[in-house]
Amino acid sequence: MEQEQGREILRRLRLKVTPRRLEVMRCLGEEQAYLSAEEVWNRIRPVLGSIGLPTVYRILDELAEAQVVTRIFRSDRTQYYFLCPNQEHHHHFICESCRRVEDVDRCNLDGVAGEIARRSGGLVTSHILQINGVCGECSRLGEGGRGRDAA
Image (cartoon, rainbow, N blue to C red; front, top):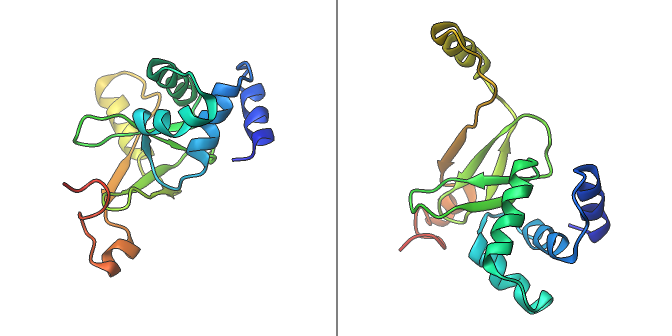
């Protein structure tokens, strides 16, 4: 992600444009894969010098709340993040081997949300769908489950 694009996003969100926020966004924007807060922290420390891991978590959380960054859920209980420029309603396919994140623009959950609202007598305000699997490239390479996350 270009720095000016990051500035524009932060201004639109009415967040102060700071070198730390810009660097976190640049770091995530360079990847087509998700990263943990610690991975982001390790990558930006050489650039910024002194920055604490709690600061990185705070920045990631505020960007996730603003829906610029997507939280990725994994069974290892580590929180992962992905910079998602797509601001339209969509979901994600997550490759368990190479960590690539792909947009899934199709959403058929409106009927399910309506049924839940009807049954509960409440109001469904949002939903998140994350589809995990192995991408086509990893499947062709025979890396199903043996990528960077596999132990």
